[in-house]
Length: 366
Image 1 (cartoon, rainbow, N blue to C red):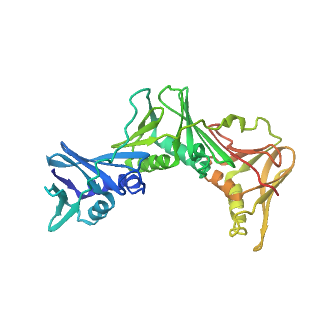
Image 2 (image 1 turned 45 degrees about the vertical axis):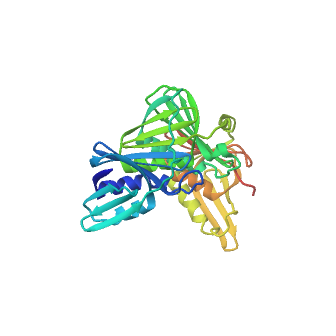
Image 3 (image 1 turned 120 degrees about the horizontal axis):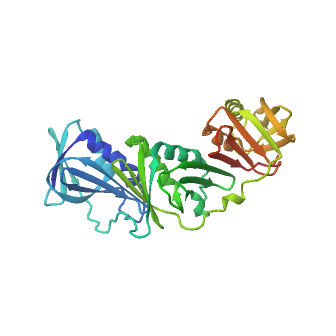
């Protein structure tokens, strides 16, 4: 194996696969990557047991080949080499000779022949093209509601519900739910649950690749994202997702219209008083055309007044302020509609301008 590649191009490729390559796992050689050299390109691949990533870089190739290398060492070295062409030669000893200008290094390769990259299932696959920015934004709007509880594995990912040229993303953590719909360019009907790690990686790749559309290939056990020159394959979470439709209340008794910025700022200010006590709640006293937000702790008391328009009954209800802020930060528009059922039932927060996104929150005892 012998090739030459520009430092900037190779460094970018190494950073692209870093999140997967540097994951600690007992299933694969830790901190490893596969370097494959072929006609006019070098391919970098890595796997953490549940996710595989592969990206390509242009190179001048004299002799093709394949080698397993420590990613972190390669990444740190290439990042610190001067911006110029770097020469690579695989020696008979198995060491990779790296030279740039007057700098020379030899990197020992791994000999683990059991290192495997994920492959897509060949049967029963669906293909869909998606607007990259829309998908990234949808992930941003639901990811805060993905559960961290490993005892409820199905909730540690987001549901992707494909139906009639619409893709709905749903995340639930037991205390809140987020749902977002986007238009897609394929007509498929399928439900899958994608891990949080894969979704965060998709977001990162979209931002770095700067592409308008991405392609998804879906099977029963895996999903593949083709994002620019990078491919990510991820194992899906098996099992049946919660019947989320039964969680969403069909009738509410108290609905308010409120300015998003004023509501968010008021809640945010009250958290200063309870910053050292994560179990403290804030109270929303909704009456007439005013919402009074209060809380207290050993540090003091807070009281905020927010103008609203109320339809329905007066209400006193408590919430975890962090849950409210997580939802408000990803809401669009100037005005929000907040629908309440009762002091112990869920509320729905949505924009007054669109129906493609909402967040559901459970209240706290007060």
